[in-house]
Image (cartoon, rainbow over the protein chains, first blue to last red):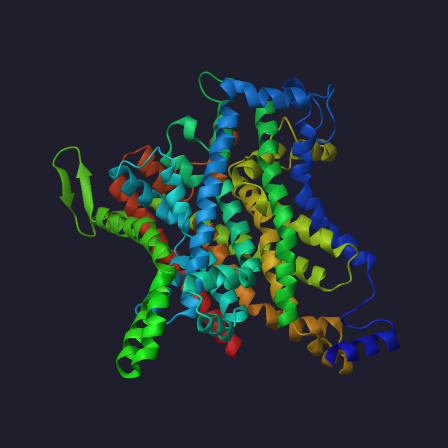
Length: 298
Length: 312
């Protein structure tokens, strides 16, 4: 009914509040946000093609005298016996186990809290919601102190285990389950003799897919970009993720035995953001469909 | 785990009187099948460090005399510590200026994208959100290069203006420079939060407004902003938490900015440096706890006030 009325209105006037005419002026004003977002990234792309001398001597937003992107890439990947490749592998390890695990745990738990009444449920929920307000970085130093007592620092576990906790992800799945997994459907599956876990994996997970993708997206971004925790936990560069490694390369320019490798810092930064932006854009499509599905439902 | 359920089901059919409470009790505990893994990790990686930090903050480790219980002594020391308050004042000022500015920009962007009056709406939505995916370290390195005299943008602008107005690494400017980086990283993220809230407004409301002859500014004031209120409260809370926890940006910028950034530039940097440069673990834990409590308290107040306004 409402849709029909809207079409009717639009047909009569040509435009409506929900279908206003496009505005060039507004587009141009909003384009300033676009420029702001893209300027540093454009700088990074342009400057990853420059040699180190060109980096200092030529204007930031024009190309250098030589096109050295390929040389820079090779140098980045082979510098110091290919430590960058090691860092990339570490980052992938932390993302797969940390973000993957976080998504899995948040999904299971958010679903359990939404669909079951069990002893301790209210306390559970209150504690986890309280945890959303406790900032992760406030915990980093205490976590380090505890983990060093347990001998867990300087191992991958020191990064992976804290990454497994995503109170916000749990909350998101909880909200989404309440809205989009009908209890009648679960009851029907139970009557058919399906176990609770089987019902979860065959029915609920599909209904929850947009929420799971969203939680995974944020968890992947958070672990890929994690800096504070690995900085604290790891002393062996062999376990560094890309972020800590890049910062070490950048810091190499100052100090006593300064050996600036700015071209590698720039190219390494580009290599670091390309996969995450790609994942991001790829998941964004699912995620946007989840978003619009949510708004259609309302 | 599914076997317990199939076992329970036929038993319920046999003798209703005995089996029902049994079955119900099983069903009651089923929630834990799903929730225990999170709970275990949560206790280990969240509660335990928190309690351990509380415990540590009650002790002091001296070269002479070793480890001794000092009660709230570390907290007293922190409240009289100018280095702590210097960092605290800085993040508080940062929060008062940067957070409203960033959220206002994000709201403007969200309203513009939601207005359906832009060409290439999808492009705007994705690209403005994009910086969120860039690691803080890379964001700071990029902006650090742009800020520096040798490489980038500010040098170019200064040349063009024929002066040196822009000195991003000057002591009085460096907080603004960091504010710009943080805004760049998170304006798109907040835009998305606001935009998703605006998307949930039913079309009927707009049609009613149109029938009443409402202007677009009236629509924004009467329909869109109230609908986004919950999202604004959430975004404000997250931004407050982020500001109080400021660490990555100043810490990565520090070597680039010729050390105008002190070791206690923010409370979080202070806690970090106390632990790793000073070995003062007990005091470091104290600072972390004080900041955690203040952050949680302010987040709580914002939430209460935000929801109260919603009732009005």
